[in-house]
Amino acid sequence: MAGAGKGSKGGGGRSTKKKKKELSNGRVQYTMRIVESGTCAVCKTPCTRGLNYLAKMSQPDTMGKGVPCILTRRAIT
Image (tube, rainbow, N blue to C red):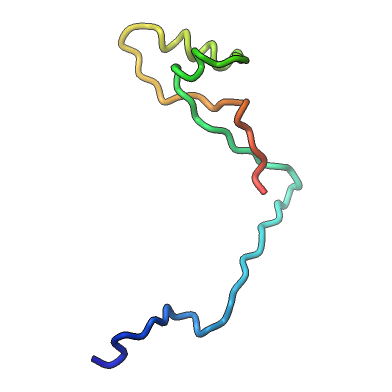
């Protein structure tokens, strides 16, 4: 039972800070949420990508995985 009851998680008591990665090419990267056809159907500002996906999903026996929504675009910082 040596060492039982100790709350140490390892690491030796050193605090390590994560550095943010610098992009080598200087471009800003973005992330967007994946939305399904139901979200595109009720959207107040429909885009062409969403409308095309909605038309494709309205066909019978069609399976989809969603499309990236440009309205939810966020820069990765």
